[in-house]
Image 1: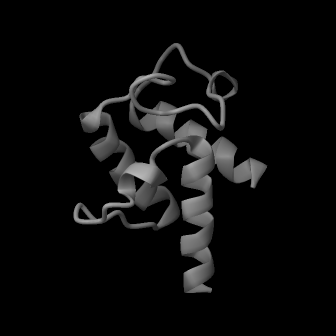
Image 2: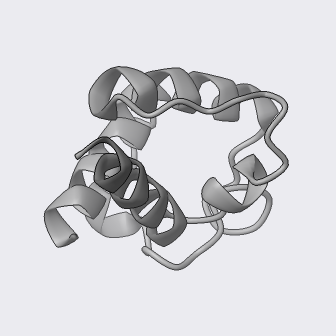
Length: 88
């Protein structure tokens, strides 16, 4: 799971062009939106597309759970892991 979290952090940084942030700067359990990393709704759209390309996971705009999936790196890692288990 640690490798997955590192890949998620690298995807966040590259897809959102966060120049002054390294994967080590992002705390797994801290919020990605508002407090914490401070991302906004536009960032969520871009990140969703990047995660779909990288990990093959899909986020539905009608899914009320999306907010919880994007809560933190930990939450994204858990979601990606569960989606991968469904396809295996």
